[in-house]
Image 1: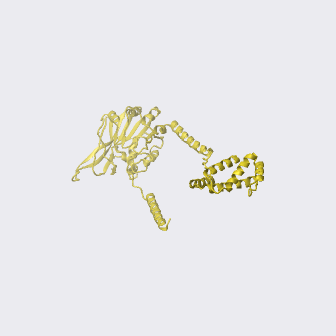
Image 2: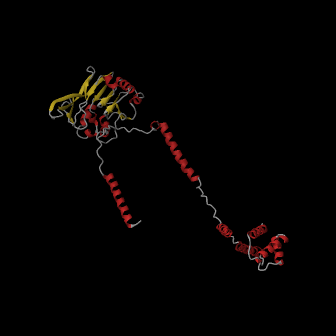
Image 3: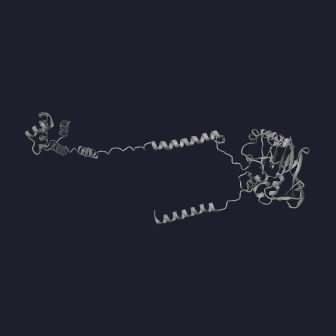
Length: 402
């Protein structure tokens, strides 16, 4: 890598590192999403309020619920009085959950719901209806309570309030406990047309118990608990008896929901642990099996005998040029060298003595050796040779060596 490439690469690394550091150190934008979960510290979470419950209900046991209302109440002790607390933008209960909650209240327990909208089944049974006042700009809303001890107090809410209020209640069983007040303005001119005061907090008797319904759930969020409105949340909860309290952490906008296809398995304790153990077992199997397996031995092809290929190439060249004399001369030279090296035979002079010694050492018949040597002498004395001479010589030498 040349010097110029190194400089460019270094600059790229510096820029990339700067971007990463900037992203890590830069402040995150404030999350105004409504959550209302006990763990969320964002403005519209309920971390502060949830942690203050132990002060408001100092003699009570607080149970955090992470499952549906039906599953909790169907297994609860009906002989023990308690409170059930909901807070969210919308409390959507199905028919079974609603029936179980109504049965729970009828047995002498209290249900506190802080939400801007409710499911049809609950509104229909309690005979209540809610409306909303939408405006393009956020306005300040004043909230008060009707109790004589809190009558002089007013609480201001200016952000995230949708001005939800009751427009219909069951007057025989319902008591209004609080109101919200806001200015109704002309959207075009901005002038105040009238001051509207509507109920936002009611108590509805049901059987031996009661429902407390508040249409301003934002009052229980971190944002307003830390901005001087914590007394409003405390005053509203003062209507509940000092019994054990169920905090619903299931019907929440900010609840973490598993969207994986494995959500059913992961939601069942036995199946979840079975799945985890299977994954761990497979991982251990792969690790230990890989250690026991021998590495693949590569196939190494044997080296080719290049000398044989060279000899074939040279022989083919001589054969194509029909230079039989030169080819026979070289073949005789190689054969006589073979006899010298193999049988330690003097081949400078080929005579009768040579024939007898070679026959004795090679184990061949005297007649066969004699014909071979005589043919060699014949070829050495001949000036020109034919293809037939070459073929005959090759046959005799091959027969001798076999």
